[in-house]
Length: 156
Image (cartoon, rainbow, N blue to C red; front, side, top):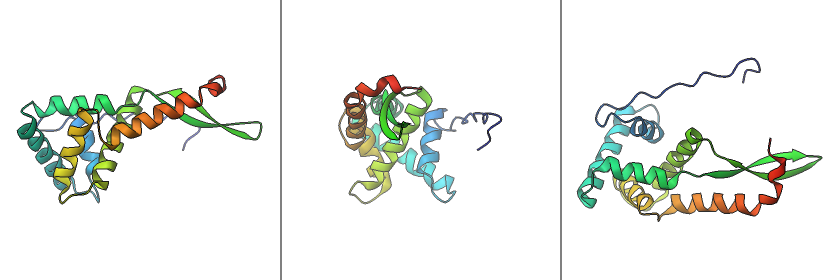
């Protein structure tokens, strides 16, 4: 990590089917071992499944799931005089979206089921309906921040 300059933010190009940067970011999170075509197949099939089951446009359901899963505050460890405090901090929008995508993929993988397509579709639909593991994780993060509100004056 360089001490001199900040690393330039790379902009994620939009995907080819939905022309959405969020879908492209999800594909990159799902991808393992550089297999982009496999990951995009999984994501697009999951979105098709969502469209069939809900009857709503899949991109709309996906956006609602991301909005519901994005945390507003989180805690960061801060050392002050030999003690470590969990200090609540507001989450920047790009970090919040990254956390939401990470949690969606993580809890999709840990679900019981056969294929990643169905697991991802179910997790996205649950997040859009404000249920599921991803939403529980966001609520837990908010509770941690609320519990440590007393240390907010250590914010940097």
